[in-house]
Structure formats: structure tokens, C-alpha cells
Length: 155
Image (cartoon, rainbow, N blue to C red; front, side, top):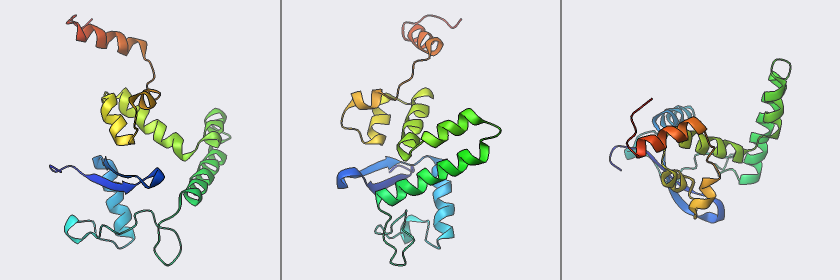
């Protein structure tokens, strides 16, 4: 769609969706596909190809529970690796989950100025109120934005 990259996926409840794929994510995906010896160009891509495959030889996609377990184990291993130098961060990692990554991505997008409705669409939330839980107030930023909205010059 207009030169941007989109990922078509099947999510929770078997809902089909489309999310935007920023350039750094597209680069990482291309590297991953190359490592799997899969094509990266649209013309050669088979839409039925599973992106996150299980380790089974049948090439089937990994189910959500095993993927959750793999990611959770990764967070624990990362926490173990930094425990001595950064105990507070290690504790956060021990509590992390795959949903935490989703929350973090949404929070960062909003903090960098992405519109709430666009983040909602990319998260595929039905309600804007669900997405609004990812907003985190920054008093100075909020004050500046309101000044800008009402034409007050920069301070």
C-alpha cells in the first residue's frame, strides 16, 4: 500500500488484521526470512508462509502458548544475565511477558507523537478506551501541546 510495508496476520480469536511494519522491523524481518531461506520480495512471497514457525519439521506456525513460554524464558534469562549490575531492571524483566512488549511498543509510539487512533488500529483494539490505557502523562509535554493547540509561542 503506497510503498509502505504491511503485515497481514491472524490474531487472537482468529481475527484477520493488517498492521504497519516500520522500516527497522521490516529490515529485521528480511534478515530473519533470509536466514530461513525464504524470499523477501513480494513477487516471490507465498502468503501462506508462516512467519513464526514452530520447530517441528512440518513448518506449522507456533501456537500462542509455546510462543509465550519461549518469550517468558527469554526474559528470565536476560534478567539472570544483568542481575548483578542492574537488579531493579532484572526484577522488571522477570515480571515481563509478551504482552509487556506490546504495551511498551504502544507506549513508545504514543510518547513519540503517534495519534491514539492510529495506535489503536495497529493494536487492533475495538475500543479507543482500551488503547488509552497505554497513555502515560508527561506534564511538560502535555502543557507544551496545549500551548501549541491554542497558539501560544514556544517558551
